[in-house]
Amino acid sequence: MTATLGQLLMQLGDSMLELHVAPRGLDVEVRDVVICDPDDATDIRGHDLALVVGVRGRQAAAAVLAAGQRGAAAVAVKAAGTGDGAAPGDALLAAARDAEVALLGVPAEVRWSQLDVLAKDVLADVGDGDLDAGEARTDLFGLAQTIATVTGGHISIEDSSNRVLAYSSTGDEVDELRRLSILGRQGPEQYLALLREWGVYERVRSTERVVRVEARPELGIVERLVVGVHAGQRWLGTIWVARGERPLASRAERALLGSARVVAAQLARRRPTPDVGVQFRDSLLAGLLSGRMDPASVAGQLGASGDAPTVVLAFSVAETEQVDRSQLELLRTELINLVSVHAAAFRRSALVTALEGRTYVLLPELTARGGATAVLRFAREVAIAAGKDLRMPVQAGVGSIGAGVAAAPESRREADRVLDTIAADRTTLAASLDEVRAEVLLAETAALLRAQPAVRDPRVTALAEQDQRHGGELVTTLLRYWDALGDVRAAADALGVHPNTVRYRVRRASEVSGLDFTDPRQRLFAELQLRLT
Image 1 (cartoon, rainbow, N blue to C red):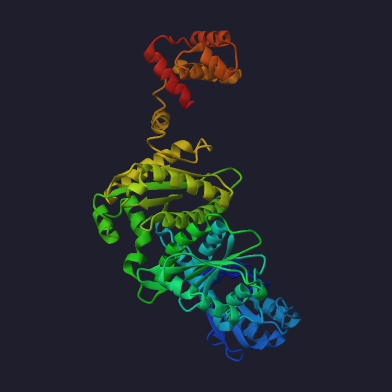
Image 2: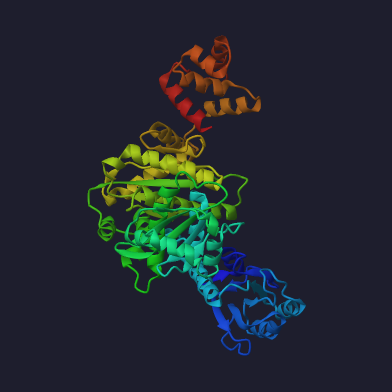
């Protein structure tokens, strides 16, 4: 259970913790959270976040020094003032610098117990990121931010005791209910009574349907959507979506249903006796696709039929020179969240994992409604939505539908082949192997030729090199001419030149290279080699 101080601050936000000074930077590790008495720092250990209770302002200076001497990563204190962001005072700042410990301010209305629980949840979620990348676990705060992106609203995730577990960051307070909920205090009783009167709580506990809750301007409450989070017959909590300045997205309700299914797996892991099937569900697909797990074993754990139609989809974020490696990793993590939400909404039994920089979705037991056409349409919708949310091109490859989970590894290989091929064409957002089989086979043949430098015709090499040196159009003209199956006028139209120009260039290419383009064997290999070039 560990996170950096920067990760902790980013997840909890300014409404819970405010950074005043960090002598050792934000990369210092935080391994635990401890509530301590200002007169007794013996419970503090190295890399702890110490919550100093019972004193405020400069009176906490001694506790800050003691915590720093015991190796604490950070100390959180409440300011002497009553408002958020009250200045910590010179004595506190000096004590933190002398002890080389980060000093954090806590708003007066934040409950220590609530901060303790939320901070430990962040440490647990971020710490779980050290698992094998194939398990593709995501923390609740990151997931809340993803749901906010997809729905266009402000998110709060609560457990079955109405305790806020995570929320999306926002630059505004939205309304009093959200502010007080995040701070661990109960919302306006008049509004809570209305929720009970309308049967909102009863409906989210008993059904999976999204419930729309009207705004109450007289109470300062904005419109909301809420959905229950369930694992089987167990009710685990709720997801609330509060409207911001703009209306919620048109796909908000569908996305919220998918989000509830993804959050269910997260909350089930937090229970004292988690469902083993839920706990290892994410890792099953990684093991299956990487060949580490037997398909029959995976099918048994999923309860999937042995021969039901099954398909694998692969998603990737386009790599560009403008995005460095660290940014790319963040984008890939967010893509996992986005795809998980959409996949769960599309099909309850969907599995999502990450392998080798790509996000994979297994859709087992497809029905007539989930045939090849529906799957491809789903892939395109997700690629479009994810690309818009990430502000980066996202592409999807769809493998062939096979019989049962045993077909998944081959379906994954096909999805990868499609992605490898369409990556060079950003206009293609999603495709199946059947749609681009010719392009895939041509690209793979070119890859084989690249891997065998000896398999070259030196005459074709000389032609390509001379054309490049002189900035000529011989190679381009040949390829367009062959694309048009020897139709000079069609090739001329594609190139925007006179047909006689095409005839001259083809004849000139033959003269320069010494190749006879009327020989089908020479023509075939010349085309393959030129396309490789």
